[in-house]
Length: 414
Image (cartoon, rainbow, N blue to C red; front, side):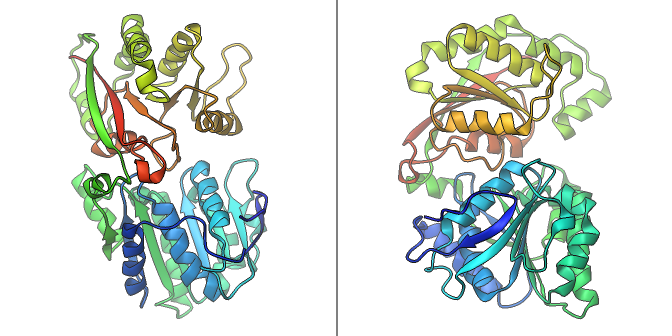
């Protein structure tokens, strides 16, 4: 296994032998489909269920077809955890079975995170740039002048590609594509989107996603097929009625926000989050099923809810913690850092935490192979979000997980 340290830039040395992670049949089929598509320029999607190995499949394919042939790759995502996961997968896959023509290749990882680099430092010698779309947009001139401007071909990988309809993604994609086109390399732009959820609830976004990826789906595998093969687990849904009634007349605007943006009115979200009775029902249900349910991942409504639930769990001497995108410590006023979140996720992955509570942090990308149960303690009208939350725990026996997973589905009565 490679010994290269995870830093903001450096060389990944190619080890001799076979890559340690053998691909499943659906991943090999995906690679064959990508090979056929790669005969010319393309802009399409690889669709695999959460836990189906999108990142590993894409990395194996791009190492063999691009890095091995000394072609450049740009990998973009919207969260730094996804960037770290992509880099780790690259490092663990750098073997001569995939890379017979090169002995090493250079990477650079760019985001707003303190441990990552910034666009101004991009070098022409970088073989693969792994970057947040926001950081690249803010340093777009450096990307184009120092890197893209010298290339006649590039592979752009868009992780969690269902987000690519956003203007920030389209600005970046079009800038790279237009730069190549203006220099006469019309066929030099290739783009692969990775997603488990290529559908959108809004009709206008469905058509927009097709415009971003005109080649549509290059390869897809159904969740049910991977469950049947034992790669993903069979979910068991349990509906726990908390019997909490919210009495409020909603305005037309509030109803629209719930239906289209999956956003509860602030006062309702706060009432649910602070409900001592409801939170205790959640806690006691876990305690009564502790051996069956642990390790447990909880999706909370908001920061207030995460803190409240965490206190109840820790008061019962259960090793629990929470991760949120941004929150200030009520005592010190200090903001919880991305580094702290990463450390908590690592502790949960290593078994040091029994319960991890999160707010909009772990719906995408993060690999939690030991996870047994998911509690959905937040309401949602989003099919995408529901799929992503449930998918966190579906790693099957053949993928190092369990045969059956319990989904603690906590509902609100209205």
